[in-house]
Image 1 (cartoon, each protein chain N blue to C red):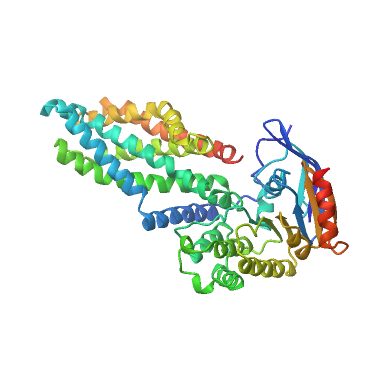
Image 2: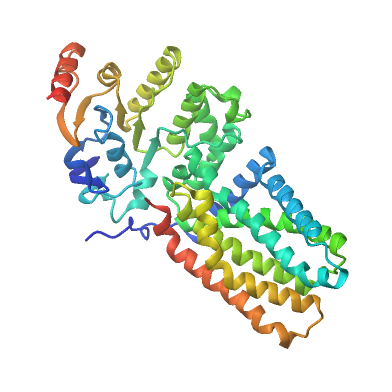
Length: 238
Length: 232
């Protein structure tokens, strides 16, 4: 019985070349986004809309609004990230350029890491703009370093799993629908833990009260980084 | 250079390639012709390491694709149906991207050389999305030969080109072959197949139905033979 993929251990590129390839893919994605300005602007508009819809639809008093604000913030992050993740490989697949990378003598996990980093950069740019907007609309101080750290770690895990699942979704006919269907159940633990953690930090809880939720976020990030690196080679090849 | 031995491939239980055996010698230009759905692109994608056969074995320069895929990719240049280029990057940026993936140390020199070879030096800082199909196809060839591959695979390179662009492409294909590269070109155009290549193979219903030297053939004789094969 033949193995599932070509053996990718022969003549593997050295570490220096590996990171050069990662950097090249990120450079390419950033350059393209700077030129076409579609992804980040679409994510921003979407985030604004979601935030405003929640703000006016809920019509809450000040204290209730403070209680739901973190949930609304994470819903905004999750929905807008999903929108961006749908484009991660779709752009490459539609133009055939993914094959250009697959034909190159590179370690395929470098493609994953490169695509993940560029998507994560786009997601973080959106978050940097959305957080001050939330502060203005909801009046909640969101600038604590621990809170910002949990936003970064939570988005890291969500984007990581999303990038991996986007690899599967891009080969399906209904990829725009397929990605959220695959992603939401798998990312549930990190989203719930990140919301719990964020709520505790904003309400002034001490470390002991949110350390377990924080640990779940960190462990989730580490586990899925490993899973992604181990499985991407199999997922990307036909 | 390319040795294909008893290769079979099926998709969803439907056989596309059946027990293909084909040898292409170093420096040889082989054209692979056949009707739509005969398995030409599947065979090219297997050689290009993008697909795996269900049975059989392929070696390129003695390297088995099962175990030495990375090394084989370094030897291959592929011009596919799609250009594999990024519309929103310039010609130079596209080539720079691939030069970095292939770890080409003298990339500035190589990029300028291949741009010159495909007559796109004056367009190097222009976004690819503004290029005509012919220019994109030429840039795609520049991308494929950037890392000095020993084997070049072309999948219907003349598709969608006007006559002038097609003639220019023929010149590039001939000069690529004259540099000593082994070339496998898929085409529907029997005239191009005979005029450019040293050998021609006909793939029909997933099997090699004919494989011979082009010097022994006139276009009319070959066209008759081809139609006999595909109508059999």
